Image (tube, rainbow, N blue to C red; front, side):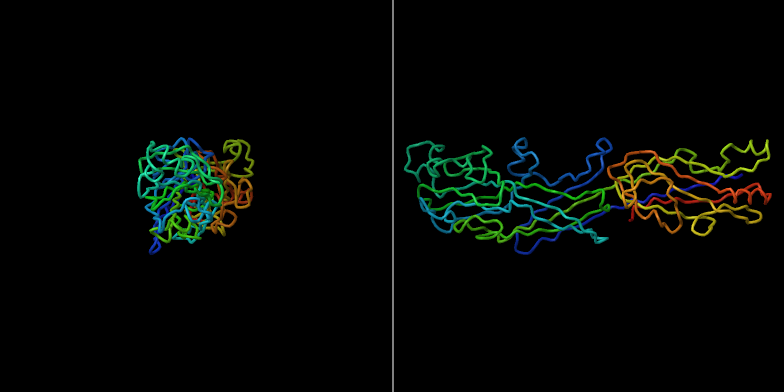
Length: 412
């Protein structure tokens, strides 16, 4: 009997997306990538690929899960900061979006949406005084002492509820600092001497991300934006004296998913010969007709993405494929099914064991990984049922053949 040939076709897509900054606003890209790592199959998370700048770029061991970016946002005092001011808003005050905010990112081609969450977990800058700290507090002491006297404590110590990182770097008239912001409440420093003028040269913001499960996302790029208002009473609020050079900050998110879907058939495995369970010799010796013809063809699959499966046929028999005798055209259907390895389930979370493959793809519309499956073993099952085997033998034909194309398709 002529072997049945099986062709395998895998399809993997790549996503791209772009960001559009909001007019009259400072903007910053936030990028993250998911690329499965065979050496770490259980680490199914995005990697933040946004270039680090500011505090975490120079103090990475202090940051943990926090990232930082130095923004060209500056703030300048519009009036002198009075000593012993009663209202925190009249001095050096900071209130940041420290609670989690949701950003919806959209796949440009499919329109699929996923949520990303971000919170500001740190704030830093360099304050610049209109005169040296020593002159403002009366002179005759070191810069370190003068900056501490000006605010009663140095800016390496954060006012509550902000918390300290211990970082401080100063000159006669400047002080670099970075604080953590564990909650969305204002923290403020009180001046104990008159500060005629002050500015923040830039804004370092530390942030944390919560990204979606990439195994449930399509390959490609997703984009979305989040805009913070900047100024008194806004999302980024430095009080009533320190006013910003921009009224808004837009974060443009780009999440790229680079899935793997790879199927490997052993050499020669694309030619499948259907045989009885006991082999042909048993029939030739005893004359007992085989109860079925079958072949289980192993394959290896690597998958981090959703996919579906279906059939294409040279010879069609209803919703499945057939093999045919070339002389008479007599054909019999071939039942094709698939078993997938642990880690891959159907859309309801059930394991996939001898699941029928049909031409219209019904029943195999969605398979999904619970983790990155790296070169695990599965099987295609080909079978001709007993009644059709008897019809083949009774026909007197000796050769039946046909092409069956099994499709793994990531375009779900």
